[in-house]
Image 1 (cartoon, one colour):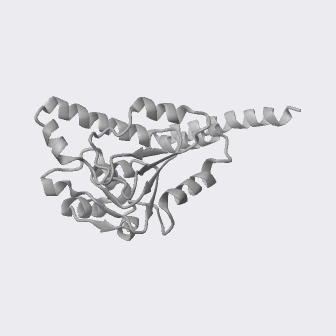
Image 2 (cartoon, helix red, strand yellow; image 1 turned 120 degrees about the vertical axis):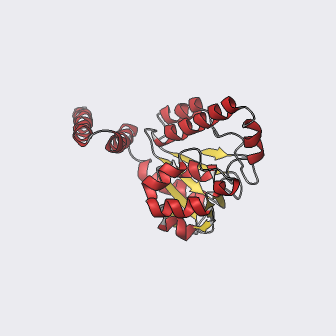
Image 3 (tube, one colour; image 1 turned 90 degrees about the horizontal axis):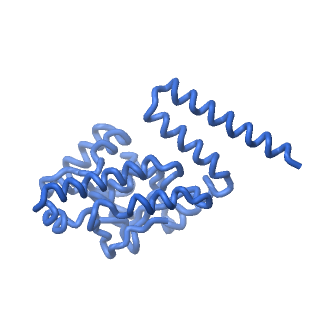
Length: 231
C-alpha cells in the first residue's frame, strides 16, 4: 500500500509523491500482486500546494523538471505489470485526482468529493488529467469538470467514470478485500500476463496485441502442463 502522507489535506509538496525506484521495487516483489494508493487520515489528497508550486515557478527549468517527473511517475503507475487501485476517501482534487485516475481500479467512499479546481487559479491539470479524463470519461465530462472547476460528489464521479465503485464501508478495507478477491489466489505470472495484454490493447496494433496474448497463453500453458506432470 502506498499512502499520500501530508495530513490533514494531503497536499502534494511535489508532483512525485513516491520515487520511481521504490515504485518498481514494490511492483517487482514476487509476493506483491497488487498495489493500493490512498491518503492518510480523512482525505485522499486536495492536490498541489499552490504556494510551493508558484515558488517553484520562479525557476522555469525547476518547474518543468518537477512536472515532467510527476507526469512520468503517473505514466509509470498506469503501466505497472500489476493492478493498482485508488482507495479514495474524503477530498480528491487537482493533482490528487490526477493520481487517482492514473490507477487501473478506482473505489471511493460514497461521501467523497472531487474536483479539478486548477482553472480557478488560471491553470490546467498538469499531470495528464485532461487527457486521462477525456479518454476514460469522454469529452463532455472532461469539459464539464475541468472548465467549471466545480466540486462534484461521488455519485457524479461514478457517472463520469472517474470512479468504478462506491462503498459505504471503510474504503481502504473494502478496496483491500476487493483486490484480494482479484489477485490473492492467482500466480503472479498470470496476473502480470493479464496486465501486459491489457496494456498491449492500448499501445499496440490489434494484430500485434492478439499475437502477444497468444504467445503468453502458450507459455503459461506449457509451464502449467509441466507442473502437472511433476509427481
